Length: 375
Image 1 (cartoon, rainbow, N blue to C red):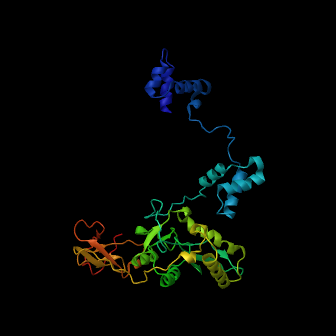
Image 2 (cartoon, one colour; image 1 turned 60 degrees about the horizontal axis):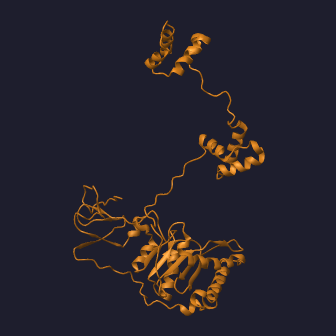
Image 3 (tube, rainbow, N blue to C red; image 1 turned 180 degrees about the vertical axis):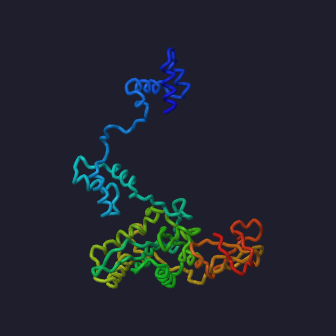
């Protein structure tokens, strides 16, 4: 206010240069002339700061519409701005707010919370490419979308398929996708047909743990210990396992006529698998059935493979809390999501200062007294 008064007094003097005064006070000529115009009309009252709010706001959302938006959000917390805008359009017609207006109102009132994406320490970089030349070169496995039996039992089949012969090795209905249940199914298949060279799966549970180093889960670690190569599809790309998804399309015919119970549905799945493998001819196999092409694997051992390492490598066993103590300051190595996944597992790292995979803990105590986890 004092600056305006000084400017008005100097500008009212005879022969005053308005442009020079504006440069002196750091204002534009338009602002200087506006102050002079207001002073001539309103006096000193015109020099006070005035509200810059527009006289009319044609795009302002009515209070009634805002209340309706909040009521719909409270009743249906899972509805987004698009659904709320569509519902309001039925009641208000042309006066209904747009999707962006609803989103702006919800955000201004704190009814929209930003969702942070989950942290992924592992991902698939490119499309997997593996050539199969014989049975058991590659098995594919996945969970098909579940459906209900007539008594409302959940039917979610685990399917395993040989990529070369197209033979469906298993269609097993499981109560859940727990690692224990999936491992039992795979172990029975290994005992009956032998071990494959590689297994392809998607990035779902329990095949992959996306927050673990290398994407390893207990199931994938067990498969690696048997000498089976792991092949992962890209996230959100079912075409990477297109043959398996095409088989799921044929299996979908069981959903059209669900059985009474899960046990009855399992019998229907077994009949479908026998017909698919032994009756139905496949064009890709020259009119043969998968059972005529498939042969059991010669690899039958289910004993974990003990790797051999050079003599200048030190071998240490990881404890239950995910640490390694080589009788020196504690070292910590963790590749899995939980320390229990390293139980009875061995970790091998090259000895020396270049062992970047091991990380020294700042533990002043004896390494065997109380190991600490670094990662």
